[in-house]
Image 1 (tube, rainbow, N blue to C red):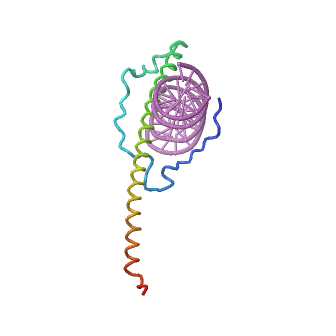
Image 2: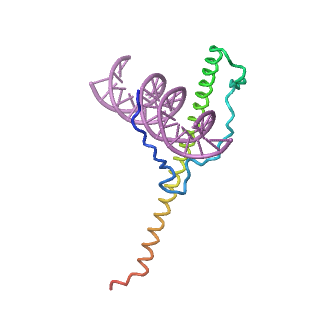
Length: 113
DNA sequence: TCTCGACGTCGTCACGCTAA
DNA sequence: TTAGCGTGACGACGTCGAGA
């Protein structure tokens, strides 16, 4: 199952420059319960132990990545929400400016008659 | 009731970036 | 150079509404 070429663009920041990638204060990254820290590498010798260590490392990595993906998605959602509310604000602002422009035009335009 | 497509969520893999 | 992290992409799965 090969993936196609990845299009990594980093577009989150490139587009506007004023909105760093999902820059929201991250919660404390405590590991979920059940995570056991590694035994000291010096104590592993037999192939069996090495295999167990590799498995353990992989499971730890998967667990961390699972959590990282959740956090990443949470931040992304928040970021999108933030953008949406910004759009709403800007639309209101735009509307007001257009109205103001019309008012000024009315005031400044020479009378027809 | 069944089927189907759209949509959302989750876990995993792959890859780029960065700090040590 | 390497380990660890963040994130895009993918596939699997569940849910929901529409149409037969």
